[in-house]
Length: 298
Image (tube, rainbow, N blue to C red; front, side, top):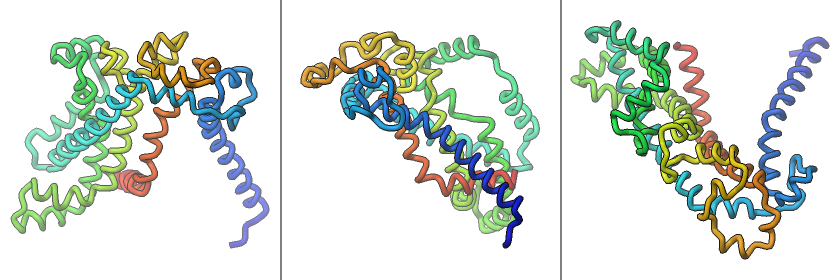
């Protein structure tokens, strides 16, 4: 199809604008990666933008050799895996139950659930509730409060309602009960939407620092994002890393004197960001399909 001169110019402008947006997103990431792989003292003098001037892995040796950081990663991985899996189950079960139009008090239940999405009691009542439930300073404070997402439930509900009723009715005529219908009909057809919601939920768990900062005081229970928040607010390394840093590795390193707080911060940022970025390519096709189908049917 032949394009006019104006259309060609418009396409070039669109390409340039999109390329600029991509660079604006990628550059901070590449800059932090370069700082984390660079000698700290050298980076403090400036001149590091896209690649390191004095390449070193000592920053990552300190980060990955610290017991507090390793424990934080275990907490983050555990809460992400458990929270995402159980959260999807709860969301799917609630959405499937509310998809039946003959459910008693269905409109009342939907209205009550919607009300909780629009209004909340605030932080202080929420803290008191968690304290009364015995969740403060426990691992489960990361799991139970986030098990149910009203927004995810409504998206899942709309998706299930978009499934042809003839499929469900034919399964019921063959003697299938609700559980069998859910397992053999709903779940196989909902895999793209479950993948999309699972990615959203996993990213939310992985990036959450708030719960660890306000509901947990035990250092061995904080997630990596809360540790990063503490590190970014710290004035020196010992205030956060404490005495658990691998001193033997540091003693063997001739670059110890060149380590700075900024280089350690950038290394922690990269180590905390890369794992969740590696998950996206495996879920991309399901994610895109789920978002498209959900937007059309919603």
